[in-house]
Amino acid sequence: MKRLYSRLAAISCLLAFAANGPASLRPRYGGTVRVLLQQRATSLDQAADDEHPATRDRVANLLFETLTTTDDQGRVRPRLASSWSADPARRVWQFRLRVARFTDGSPLTAADVAASLSKATTTWRCTASDRQTVTIESPSPVIRMPEALALSKFAIVKRQADGTLLGTGAFRLGEWQPGERALLQVNDDYWGGRPFPESVEFQMGASLREQLVQRQLNGAAAAEITMDQLRVLDQTVQNIALSRPADLLVIVFVQPESSSGKTSRRMVDPRVREALAVSLDRATLSNALLQKKGSPASGLLPQWLTGYEFLLGTATDRARARKLAAEASFTSTAPITLAYDFSDPVTKLVAERIAVDAREVGIKVQPYGDAHVNQKSAQAALNADALLLRVPLPSLEPSVAFAALATDLGLEGATASSAFAAARPEDLFEIERKSLENFRIVPVARVAQAVWLNINARNWQQLPNGAWDLDQLWVEGAR
View 1 (cartoon, helix red, strand yellow):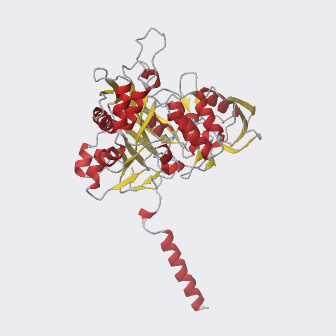
View 2 (cartoon, rainbow, N blue to C red; view 1 turned 90 degrees about the vertical axis):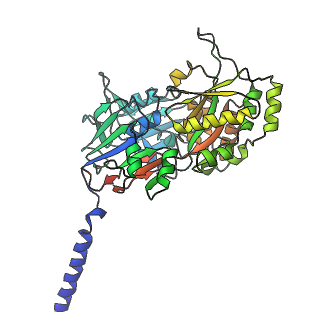
């Protein structure tokens, strides 16, 4: 009996040690997590036309939730919707809501969801079938409706009469300084359980010069970094989270204005557009300028996501480029003006390299930086023939990602609808091939997103496309 008691006592000690092991290994509740963002967002409304929507979504995704979500493999998971079903034609979908509350304490209802989704899309008809069931009807089949509703643009927002935006997320907005700072405070009544931090603070447009010199993030848990900053940090042992090459750098030729009273743009000859496309040395651009952290792009969707991008290849052919430019009677007196986001050093470098490659075939490209190149409402007023855009990969589900990109890049509405209805990879490939054949859209390269992490940051999750999943984030020693 004595031996039995001795063994039990020893086992109890071991269990107590395991349960009370090093504090650094146990998640810690409380404290403030500080994150430094490269760009500035002026609104948290995901229906607004912001200059930097990716930055806005970094913050807004902790406040407002979608009906569904997708994991790092692109598989759909329930979120505000607990279940869903569709008719055989995949045109009518029904989503059953879980019990959740907005941060003001009011319950989430199907009427709230229908109103929010109706503001995000005019293509689908969204109605409340009962208090907890939402019906979405589409004029054409949407094979991947649950995956589509995981896009940030479909986040559920309750809009108050005074302009206040309410969400159901793990955090509520405590303080908002547009373009400067956002302080998010924990939502103690969150349906998914309390997150670890007491608050999350985002600082926008933050300078990292001092931190880079010291090789320390000091009080910040994480900071977005650019390729030139990554080069500095690569020289030392640092904790860097790097996504797959997912952000698409793409040239979009702007369509001429119709008779609207504004100065009409010229239509850049399709032969000149093709000449520019085949003049680009994408491999050198990716290896040299992007430090092998990017990859050449020949399609809108990456090879690692679809497996077919190599079939869309536009090989460098400068002899053909010169011939096309000559056939179009294109001369150096008529330069192509190329606008890029002046606050993004990567797009600036790439725009300048495009101009160098174009010059080799007799095409003059004149790059210039602009503050509003990413705003759809401002693009029409830009004095540019083409835009160089950096577009994040919006989803890890190919058809949903392509449909969202088609909308963002101004392709015909039927293109997005066709992508949503694509049931097979070969169908999607054919839609993408046709969308690129007139060279109004010219993919250039893909670039990874990089985040510099504090050694005390725990459970930072970055998806392959660069999106953040911060549900389980905590920081050792956070105050």
